Image (cartoon, rainbow, N blue to C red):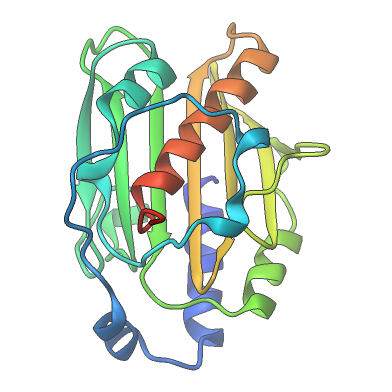
Length: 211
């Protein structure tokens, strides 16, 4: 999701949410476990109804193999937490989410893989409003996109020499989103598939494992 749109939607959620951020954070759970084995699961084969996403930091739990497959090589992580200033937002605004941004270690290679979860809880009505929000002019909705939470949506955005696929949706009261940006010459079907597998890895990293 483009940065400006994400910031606007997050602002709306914070306004709509009946629980203040400071109170909501008291229910956050810090995930303390090792990254799960990466299985490169297609999004269409991932049952998002069973994922229990936490509104907590999760970047260290994203498998390195998932990042490597998404971007095609080694990557460097830039993570940010709720309440921190981040250049992921205009003018380095304070984030109200927990996020990860992976960029190719080789700076001559283009690409970026992201994942983020809102810190405040999100209601079903607020989530539906975000799903229904008008898309930027450079973006189109992905027809028949697999579910990524309930409700959820996927989009494809064209940029300057790049294209981005993102999925986002509601998991319980956690709004989780992910995106994969690759050069414009990457086949769209390949990008959508790789983005879907990347987003499954993000959801699994941000979730409490099923027992």
